[in-house]
Image (cartoon, rainbow over all chains, first blue to last red; front, side):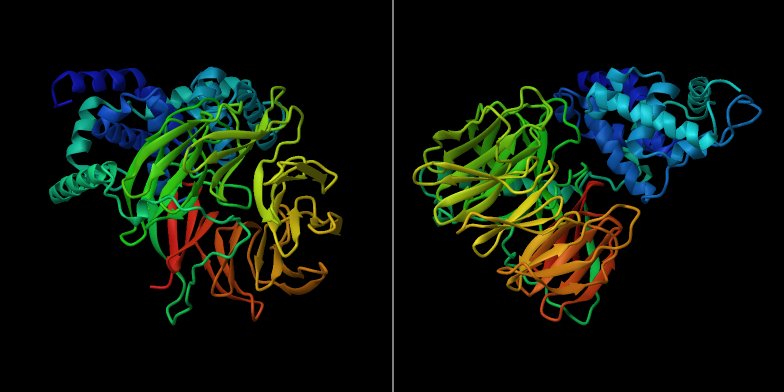
Length: 155
Length: 448
């Protein structure tokens, strides 16, 4: 940060530690491009209100909600956009995967992407989303079933 | 082809390569150039700080005056009458030559968790609209904001952090009351927007999910009905009253079984009625003897909702049921699913229920005495999430397709309909309809 001092150092450390968490969680909701923008916007908000947010028990969860709100504005309630599968870079990945992910419900998609794309534990997902582990498990199972149905067979 | 799990992992790695991390330096640029961010900049111009400082000083002076006993008449806590959701909102939304339109979209920044056929976390009190924030599938108690919205400027003009998620809001003449997930109720002075009292209920709500709880102001007291969701082994339920003046807590009923009232219905002949909305049991509490009466009104468990009509309580759930308050007998009106209900034009109005993949709702009017359908109104789009009545003789429907529909209860036809793009709890206030949306916005719909 250009700003200096203990507050700036603390926020910089926060960004270093948790930026990927925030970006991945919002990517799971909105897709890569809007998710990254929403994360950047949420972190900007976090810096602006750092004195208050730094005192929270779960500042990442709070900024996730900020990012959700900002992303939804930009999103205009359209389907999320996931980057198309590059057949050269990902020859063994079903080409329809990105589109099918976008078609899942928000909760199912968020859980599936965080657990299987970004390797979060189910507990970590539950903590971020405010869900019990059982609920996370349910969303995950339903999301994976829907994916399998959509892309055909036991992929 | 790899397993689906492996494909997802590879795709996640691909995403990481495509989208670089957000760096602190990038944030610096963003902060200095707020136009680049997704949403509007929240940083107000410099003059706003000057005005805010002046207002703060004025409020401080006013607060000191109140503490020293120089408060205005507004400071007096009045005893109020029972208020129920079944009452018509004393707000008129005149029809003009201008079409109904979305006049404002106010960004709250948090999803507003919808109620089931009511409006628990959105309330008009004093000269403002208040929005409390809860969380979906609550797993822990966290500090949560309460927002104040000025309906004149249509801006968020205050934010108060409360120690738990807001489950329900109620108001008396000078105060806002919030039932919180940390098993407390707080009193917020509307004039100064400060928390002036906290009452520890210790009712044993499961802090993770006290989602079926209700709060009303009635007869000089604040009444709390609460229960945890069914299925929790340690499910607790209680009926409690907090005296508005002394703040003394009185626990009237604490059932050990599954008979808690979770929703207030209203008062009739000295008996306050609540509904165990999952088990579909009406529970009556005699205000003088505290004698408890209970009656299961629909056989199947599930979500239900009730309104107090003329000598009867109407319960919607798996169908529509009329409970006669004089004879204490139950009549099944129909069993074809339950939808939102509201009283208007001397009748009971019901939006027919259905599934997401079926056609649009129909609205029926029932005679309150006989339970006979007197009229049906077609023309709404989608299924009804929330329905309210306004004093101009209209009922308003917020539907799952994102439409807001207005029905004239005299001519019994749809007179206005607008696509808002979202659904949510409805509130009528100062000549307009406000929709508290799950997507974190408060939307004002009216005529310009």
